[in-house]
Amino acid sequence: MSIENKKVGIDIDNDGKPDLNLDLKTLIILIGGIASLIFTYTTLQAEIEEAKKLPPHEDHSKIDQQMKFLENKLESIEKQHDRRLDNLENKVYK
Image 1: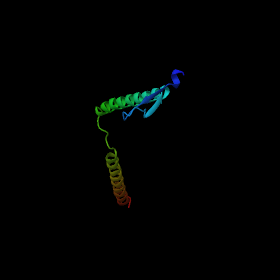
Image 2: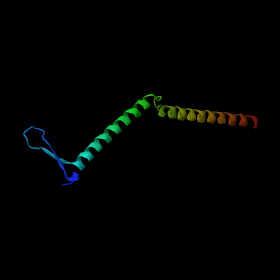
Image 3: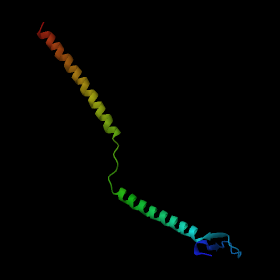
Image 4: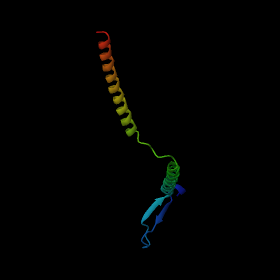
């Protein structure tokens, strides 16, 4: 029997009979998976701490709204000035 095929019996309820039979390959995969999860968790925690130091994200929708309002206001002012200029031209050239 090679070392890869060796089974490890785990007795959870202490009745003397193994409740789980795991081979070496399964144990290595299980330990690797747990190590991977731990590494991912610590990396994520470090990135969260770094993100906390950054300035808060600004909402640009309000700024966009204000810019649209000002653009509309400028257009209306330009139209008023064009009308006034037309009226003045009509008065001068009559």
